[in-house]
Length: 386
Image (tube, rainbow, N blue to C red):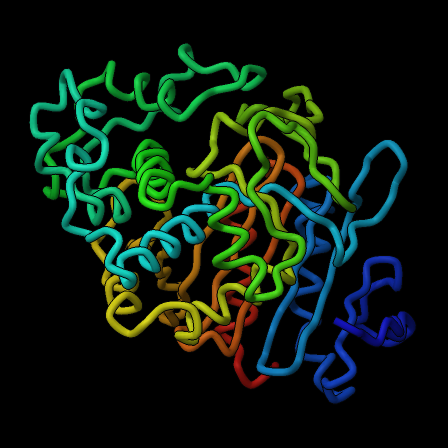
């Protein structure tokens, strides 16, 4: 995106300092920049009051684009976050995986009614006596009842390389959380199984399928799933800081930028940028990636529990009802040192993607989700201001 990088007038009352400023694309009228000040103030508060190392947000309103940031990308050097920064997107990866599955469904190469036993004989076993009833749709909307392998911290080591089969085996050592199809229970194992089915259906790696089907045709040059055990984030990126999800404000901070993300793979291993995520979700929500039948499948939701407040879940996407009553669509993702939200209007014309390069929050918010909700409210509950 070619943008006007002229900073706001820092002498004007209510304006933010130039060092934290937002930028608007050249297609946006100058007067439109004033509508994003509330978002910029929240970014500032997330750092000053929430204690995050850094945070960024990119907003799309039709042809108008705005980018804002606060804090730093690197606490050692003081480098600021930039629009080009890549980051780990966590469970937003699930939206890409579900999209590939639905494309394969449209091509007749699999059916959402196919069972895991048909594609992965004997893989879902032991405690899971109802494996024959678990179908692909249940994997994608988290109603399979299969245990979430990441809940077994003793069996996982984020410094080791994990094959998908080993992640599933961890889940199989635990009883199911519910009978298949009886209710929502968020489980990363579901998407590891979906990724394995994609590879069997296509004969190619999941990383190749995501690139060839989504990243390349839709111009997502900074979006990819790392191959194998590659621990690096290629290209410009922020450092990722974690307190390992400890709630103590004085908990030590660790740099988790480089690590073997095979532990998450299809469930959350992808890397992207705010701009790419906005482009992806605008195309997806706008019906430009999936045929109508598969679009309807994706956005048919089930009620959630023990997850994001006021949310419903489709196939790799979710809806969130904001406190003002507006409903937004997209997905969120969190893993060591990186929390992200990408949500927008149902038609995709208005989008907000946010990333924090820390996984904690002090004062005011329980975690970055509270910050993200406030940002979405600032955008979607004040339509006359933007």
